[in-house]
Length: 193
Ligand code: ADP
Image (cartoon, rainbow, N blue to C red):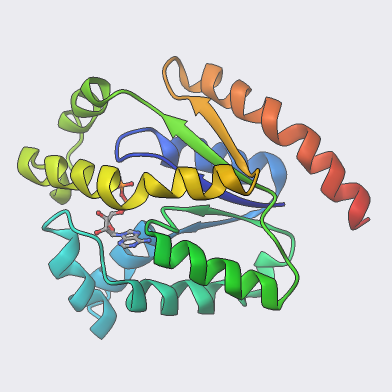
């Protein structure tokens, strides 16, 4: 099963992503985690990315695409994956479509985790990550609304979008996600026994 997971910062994507990859036995590809690992390892890409991340801005598409393209080739992706935090721009979505079309491995579903702004601010203010300072939070939300939200329409037109209500307990939300994914998991198990 190949899944794209979209949601604003603070929506709880990371928490739900961990539950999803565990239940369905697929790889978890978080571009945020990959960039933080690159930054901590002080690689060239990491140093470059840090500059944008600490300002709450998106890292340039070329850098992200390079990282993702390499990662999608790894063995553990053959059984499926959850893309968490990618694509975040229309250009990234188009590039992903091209990569997947080449291998005839289309996406099965795009999950949007929807949470109102007031709740996002409340949640993010309680975290302690370096890019969770109020001004940076605001900038990340702006980046989401301006650059990532247009993807919802893009995937809606392709019949792939499923919106999940992101309010409630972790268990409530995971239940809603399972209602969408369980039938798809059965379908893809039948296709590739
Ligand atoms: P969150 O979803 O909480 O904003 P992430 O861990 O997904 O956090 O990403 C943290 C930062 O990493 C982003 O603010 C951005 O600077 C960078 N980043 C992650 N994924 C992408 C991407 N696909 N395109 C551009 N920048 C990205």
